[in-house]
Length: 457
Image (tube, rainbow, N blue to C red; front, side):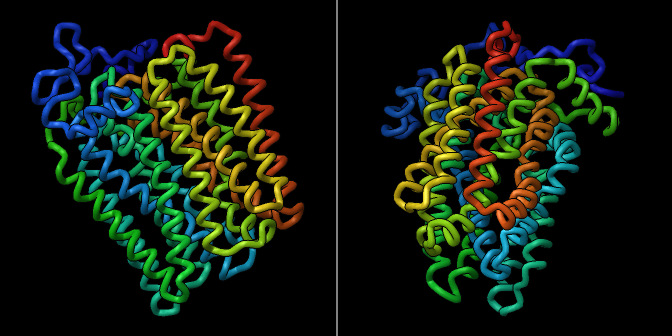
């Protein structure tokens, strides 16, 4: 039998069933009695929490998860740069680079809804443990192929395909476990800090990978061994999380197919959610692939090497970190829809600026702006989606949302083909223009209407 929410008439994005949202229960506290901040929290963190930007880190379980996710995000961002660099070095073709990246997106596009249902049916902690072991194993295989001189482009494509299968089940659980550890009041800040942690590693990960790759023949294999070690760090953090978590609901019951269709009905029956997921589509499809094309810009436009490529990725990550921390600070701001439109338009404009800049130093400044505006836009989007979604549907809703991200590696192949035909600068300038015009037209139209999404977010 399907869950109650699957058969309800109009879905209600209420968090009332969550224990921390009970009107008769006090907000969660740590040792010492003060809400959110007690003596068990380090002095530097207590001071940071008072700034509100880092308030959810006072929650010890979320802090453990967040630190573990830093290690996993570090691995992911090092992998993006190292595998992209290796694919382009082996093939000297942007099309081949796009094909390797696309292989990772295909399974995510088609299997993410299934991963969302699984996330709502099983213990998310155990599911994440399995996925991290698999990701670490794939990194070791990549390192061994390089070490023994066997690596080919088709190996990279197959490894990317395998990662895509794992990520289809990893990402919905990774997003949906956060509300099990924090209260409703902490949730917007926790989601934004999750994005901030990912973007911190976008600075550290590519910079470190660029340095290691630049060491010579052994640099790439060392990079992939280090990636595997980072996944071990996340496994350790997951092992320390409690098996009984405050916001954890009992595993979903009912037939798998009924829960899958029930999640889709929930999204389609809630216009605010449909609009927010739609607003992620074009910026992810046209804007975000710039990250995969950075090796092409470094080599063909800016005429720089691996170290400078790491600097470009690091600058994008620094901008993204600033953008996500800005969203974390503005977690209680009532008009997030207006902020999202502004950041989205500026994201497109910054992409055009980066595309048309042949000077490395100016490109660093533009890519910093790209990272800031693009991530602030997407962080606001995911924060609003999580805030308006009922906790029983978090896995399924986030899996559909993450399908838009699966389109990013898929779009890299046609964009790579355009790069080989039109050149990287023309292609990226056109992509940035599409992003800016789409967000301005659709986003402003949504803001003018008294939309339910803008009021609830």
